[in-house]
Image (cartoon, rainbow, N blue to C red):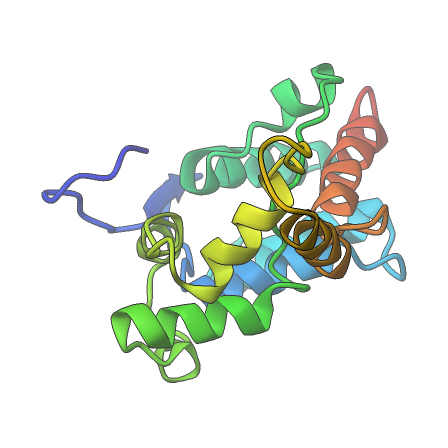
Length: 203
């Protein structure tokens, strides 16, 4: 779904001739991503927990099979979050992670407050996920969050390009803000793939 100045966020869909609405508040979506990273839940449990988190009228949902619930789950992710589980499970290409919402929570909060004068804690339940994404993407380059992204993506200059002091500084910043192998977003991607395999060909 593209973002324009005429975009409307009705976040509604129909299922079995009944109308449902999706809770697209930014904090709910962040909690959803954290849930996918929860190793204490089975993959099939995550589908129902996700639907319960996302769909306001979850109690009105009726499924004939587990596969039907999974298909609705895939539809909601694709339609409202642009997450295509079918394509994700087919692709083996790994993208370099520049940030994650858990480790960078303080940076994101501070940057929204500094740049937009927005207190994200006061916007829970109100700020739409799409708006949050746009604001995050277009934060000022001098904001704490964008500065850290800059260090993560920066190549260490050569001796000809910069002084030893600056090169040491860049190395230190890259080490401090490094995203290690336990990156939650990579775990989320693995969880999506596990969900696809868990329900593929099930009866």
